[in-house]
Length: 253
Image (cartoon, rainbow, N blue to C red; front, side, top):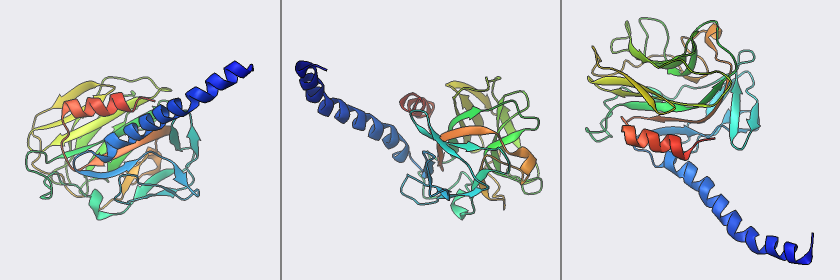
């Protein structure tokens, strides 16, 4: 490297590093500023023990088995490959959609994140859930045997109402988000494409006694997803279409 080139590299390093740091902070910032935020997980595992919550609330996720971590420009956790998923038993995840600490105009539930599915599952498998079989149904975002994403909620613990996306490709990152608006709608967003159901939507979500889980549902180890996950978030609020799209655009891998 010539002296002039070395000088130029040194001159540009500081400003470019500042821009890089700003972008990284901005990506995280859109999550931590979300209304009704209950938890945000970029998906770095600390000490091979738990996924650290970065929203400032502190509901870290424990590992069932060992979920390897990786980095492809962003940190991620690899679910599956045995009985490997993440969980937490905090009551804060028992979201009904009618939390009184949220403005009445915002009440609901929105959850999602980035997922890359290894291969088509042989049984519908959990992405994000607090759900077990009737009469203890709650809410679940899952991945089906036809590579669609489904979001289901129960108002009474015995039956669920939901919505399903179009089929998605395995082996690539997808931004998948779901939203419950009390008595009005359940919606699922897959890479910006929205699907909705407005029929017989319950006024609130039943609080299942099952743990909150990422990578499994129905208290069933046969429903563990084999996938990478990053930037998973949960809000006790019905986020707008516009805000959901802003999250997707700002956090593209």
